[in-house]
Length: 397
Image 1: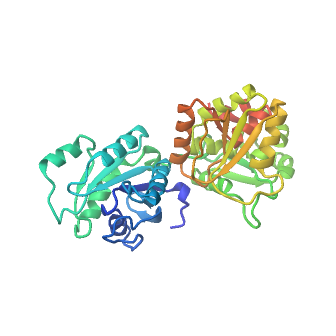
Image 2: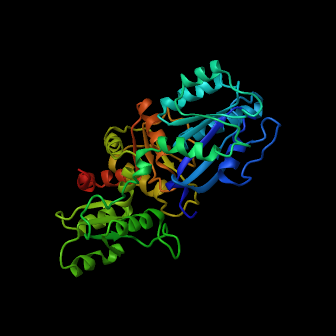
Image 3: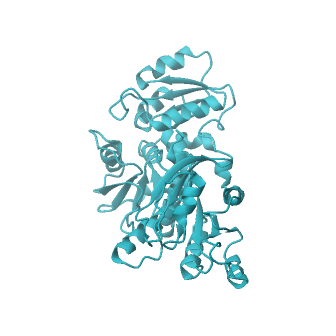
């Protein structure tokens, strides 16, 4: 239950108002997570529930508002519901015995365009059986259909899990490595972790913790040091480390200490591969060279936090960009899961995405690519601005 949301499979529940979405979430989770009522529109906002769902493992259910509420408030709810698509790994479309029409068809087409696998649940069959004609119509849109009355069907959870397992993304079933696949087992890795204002008191930040765990799972030896002790750490080892991983903010100092023969990368670049598309991010960073005076750059952060002095997204990266380009750039920051309108931007720089799932990052990459806007991430941007990007990505070749 302590698995982070960013590492969970996100299952979005979609459908018309009063189709039984909340009943289905409550049935699967075994808890009254969502309010169930005969009154349409009871679910007014996205309700999240994290749990362990065997055999899938850690998941987060996203119970959304109805997609057919035509009131002014309902329109706002629908917009929120559509934004959830960007966080959804697997979608569940709920309808009743006669409710599969344009709403559901349009939704499934959008899911297919976004390459989101989906299940259709035809609910409330205790009230009326579905006609063969209606079932044939649904089968034209989906091959993963569950016929049920979720409230009373004792086999519903089994049916749901059976269909879910068929649709699980490969990168969820075969959980990707962060760094352990880059080096042989038993290798020594030095992790450079600055203790500065960005580091929480008494803790180290999430990507660093996850990387250490990944190396432990891969039977590697982790040597954790501050940048001020890096030189001594290298001297202490009988053999050179197989890899040095640094916080991006210390990239320049670390690159000057670590000999060229030793592979070097950063936590943020590792997460560019884990949570997004490293190749796209590298290509996006190369667009920095083409920025002109007055161009707008959007810096995206997945989580909200209080900005601090020398904040990486609000101070350091803007300064590196302006120094690299010598241009008068307009740099704007945006935090949270919502994705703003991006048409006016010449470049998007995404954070390391440790607090969100890969689906959300990939959906942002997809939107940016459709609009022809280069997108990259913190670590790739920093290494590009410092002139060490080729070295930082060499190990991935």
